[in-house]
Amino acid sequence: MYYEIEDELGNISTIQLKEREQDEQAEELSAGDLAPLFYLRSEDGVQVTSVSGYSVASDSRSLIDLLSYKPLVLSFYCPCWGSYAPKHLAVLQELAPQIEAFGGQLLVLTNESPKQIERISKKLQLDFTIIHDKDFNVARSYGVYSETSPIWDRIAGISEEVFTPALFVIGSDRKIAYTFVDENFDGTPNRKALLKTVYDWKDKK
Image (cartoon, rainbow, N blue to C red; front, side, top):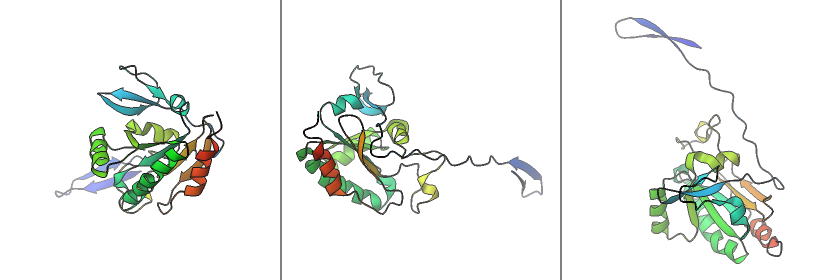
């Protein structure tokens, strides 16, 4: 597509605008799907996500390592969600001890920097782990982030690259047992269903 632009002196120049790529449809994960593998590794002394297991400090942990301990509740959080952000974080704060009591573990990934994560955790006295999802590694593989279908293109009040609010319960067999993906930023996870799913894995090894 070409556009002609005239400057103050009447000079006309032609520029070509690159057409927007066709929206990439993120592959949604459903109950029963195998959860995409990811790693937590040390980078400059802090934990970040990775799609490979390499770590200079040799302290990389994989999703499989996490699941050998307890079923995992994996969620995403971004302060740049506007008024939705504190509501989602409040839900996670309430769920964290319940998930633990029902035999699970909560891991929250964010696009916030490690320094911001530390500040938020201390200020709100969070009792669950938040880790920087570097380059949207995990969010992309779980279908809740797409460069060609940005959230700001359809949700008013968001102007940054963010992922879709989501929560997944992953069983010890690495299969997804429960999903909550809030495409419209207007819902909350079904807590009873979520906690029952976690509890159902209590006797499964």
